[in-house]
Image 1 (cartoon, rainbow, N blue to C red):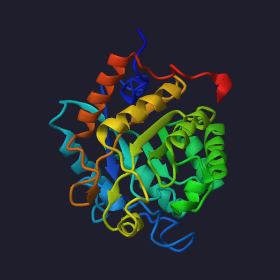
Image 2: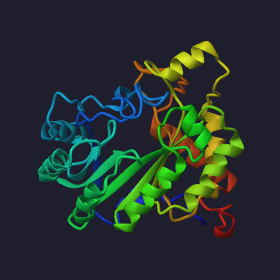
Image 3: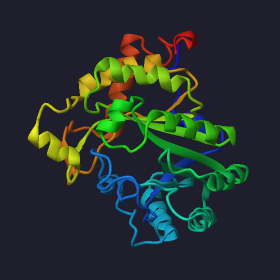
Image 4: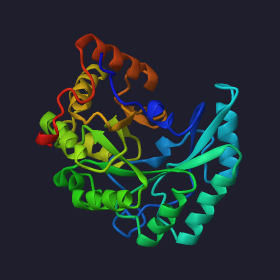
Length: 309
């Protein structure tokens, strides 16, 4: 029997014994798509405040956020280690000295065994990559890039400020330094048909990716997308849970088996989310997805062929 998919816990178990938990951090970074370097207001769908857990706040130092995060998760397992997850905004967008200070502060915190750094493809200068190359020899390091789409027309429509070629170049530069790299894709962005979304899988298969995060488009308060949908309700199509799960199954079956699937769905906090609200926790949706895959004989890579990607 084929396993359903290559999960992040299975992957991370190759590096650590026992439970390992990501602790999300907000280091107070900005974004070139917000501060005027590339644009103002960010991508049309984005309000990073909707990503932050309660313990993640720029009013607290990195060490304080890690301490509160550790306390938050302490009830789940009597013993676990941690990955410091620099999540909010663009976590390589600052002077190199400050970046190094923040990363090293996180690594000094008791129990932190490595870093996950989320950033944009256009914010990876060579001097930072040189440092990260050496860092990856000392600890676990995963650099996640927000690709969001592999179609240039979509990237332009949502105001990303970079094209797909930029993403490919950045991933190749990371991989050449033997740094683990991940990507993030949003399914349901404006103007993308089902065929467009499934075409992402074929392109992702050719990239030097270790991990992939997927999630559905959500309508978040305080975003440009909120105004666009208010003016034109047909501007985007929002999935219900069942149709999104069916799309995911089609997508997963086209992915190469060695690609780690870190996430399938996201749920913004109620105070930020306009819709769709499925009434499901992330793990509940994943359980339903897995049940559908088992029932239908679906699994990652079933429709994958290296020759057609």
